[in-house]
Amino acid sequence: MSTYKPYWDPEIETMPRDKLKAYQLDLLKKTLELCYNKSPYYKKIFDEAGVKPDDVKSLEDIKKFPTIDKKVLRERQVAAPDFGDLVCVPEEEIVYISVSSGSTGVPTASPFTAQDFEDFQDFEARLFWSSGMRPTDRYCHALNFTLFVGGPDVIGAQKVGALCIWAGTIPSERLLAIFKQWKPTITWTTPSYAWYLGETAQQMGYDPKKDFNLKKIFVAGEPGGSIPETREGIEAIWGAKVYDYYGLSDIFGACAGMCEKREGLHWAEDHILVEVINPDTGEEVPEGERGELVLTSLKKKARPLVRFRTGDIVSYTTEICSCGRTHLRLHGIHGRLDDMLIIRGVNVFPSDIEMIVRKNEDLTGEYRLVVTEEKHMAKLTVEVEHAPHIQGDTTQLAQRIQKECQSILGIRPEIKILEPGTLPRATHKAKRVLDLRKESN
Image (cartoon, rainbow, N blue to C red; front, side, top):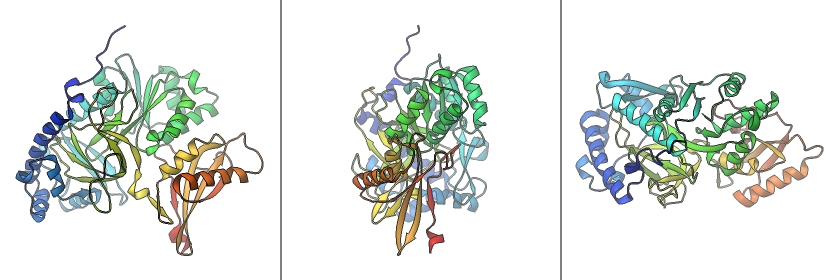
C-alpha cells in the first residue's frame, strides 16, 4: 500500500501564524494597489473614504477601507457591462466565469484569469486532500455544472488523482444507479439533498450502508454540515463520514472545509483575508463569537474583492488544529442575515431549530419555519413531521419540542406536528423559512 504525504502543501498549510500574517500583508498591499490602479470603482470609493493602498502598514489597516456587498456587484455590472468596473484585467485575460443569480434574478458573473482558475483548483485539491481524498478514491461530483462555481471543483479532485465521475445534478434514481454501478467512495452535495437522497434510496429498497460504497460525503451550501445533529443523521443513513465545506461564487468555489479531524473548517488564508464583524456596528467581534463574515481576496486578479460582506454568520478560532494545520478554522456557518428572524427580541436562525429537530428520534428530521404577524408581533410556528413509529396523539411530543426551544433559544414557538412526507424535500438547497407576515396584515 502506498504511503501518502499528510499535507498537499506543507509549507503553506503549517506556516506559523506570525509568518502567515506577514505573507498576507504582502499580498494585501499588492491587491489594494491593483484595485486602486486598475478598477475605476475601487479608485472612486477609496478616494471618497480618504484611503490609499499606501495607508496599509498592518492587516488591521484593512478596517479603514469601505465594504462592498452583493448589491454593489450587481449594480456595477449593470452600470459597466458586461462584468462591472471592479474588474482589474482586460477581457482577453478572462478565461472563465461562474454565475450566480441573487434575489433580483440578475445573473452576477465572477470572472477568473487563467492563474485565478489554477489557484482555485489547487486549493480545491488541497481541501480534498485534507479531507482524506487520495488517488485510490472514486469521486462522484454531484454539484451543478451549469454556470455554478462548484462545477469545476471536480478538476481539483482530478489533480489529487482520484477517479472522477462528472455526474452533476441529475435525477436521484440515476445518481443512485451511478453509486451502485461505479461504487464511488466520495460524493459532494448539499446537506438537505444528502438526507433526501438517503431517504429516496431506502424507499427504493436499498440499504445505503450496505448497497453502496460511500465512505465520505462532502456537503456545502447550507449550515447543516456544521450542525452535529444533522451530520450524525446523514451519517446514520449512509454509514459514511460527513465533511462540511464553505464556498461562494464571488471569489472561488470552496474556500474552507473540514480536515480528517473534523474540528472546524480550515480557511484558505493564503488566498483570502477574513474578518468577522458585528453586522450592525461593523466592529470586529471577539474570536469565538458570532458575526458576519467579511472577505478580502489576496491573489485573485480578474475581479478582486475588498471587504466583501457575505451576509453569512460564522464564528471562528485561530487555535492550531490537532492535524497540525495553522490556518483559521470556522466553527461553522450558523446562517445568513437574510434568514435571521427576530422573534420577541431574540435572533433565531433556521440552523438553531435544525439542531433541535434533527436530534429527536421521534421526528423525521424535516422542518419548516412559518412566520406570521399577530398583534403587531412576529409569531413563529415550527412545522415538523413525526417519525413513522409515532402513532396517535402527538401533543406531548409537541410540548417537548416547545420546551427544548424555550430552554435553548429562549422562545416558545408554536409546534405543528405533521404526517411523515408532508413537508417538501429539497433536491438542492432547502427553503426553510415561509414568511407570511405580509399576508397576515
